[in-house]
Figure 1: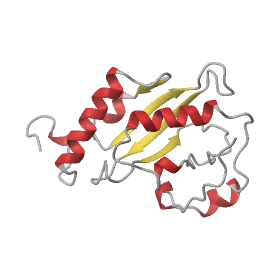
Figure 2: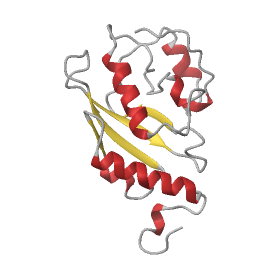
Figure 3: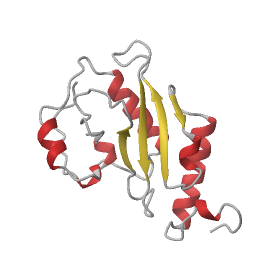
Figure 4: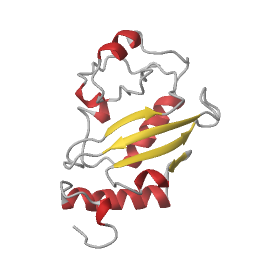
Length: 165
């Protein structure tokens, strides 16, 4: 734990491994963000464990020019535990794997998570997921899911049965 003016960025319950990894990934995202992604600098001023990434739909896709925001929340067990990632804000993409409450059905966010993955790789996966979409539509169970789900998408037991859009 670093002492000094940056103390508020590193809560006592965040392990040193987590803090070091998040600092490294934060720097990487600031210096070399995936195409169409930028870190919302204000989002990390008060806490290193919650980030907002601004995203723009890729050129030549159904989402070209659209602006979205991704919320990343990191537990004290990161990178051994996946981050909580969801769309937030006014514009949630209409996509077969994105619920209207911002929850994303993507296996690397839960059971296929590996500590070798990073914020950048998650961002690239989400860009790829959106870019490969052929039709803007919500998941078939959107209404039921949004009414009954936990606020934390990581508490959902996802069924990964569809690799197409």
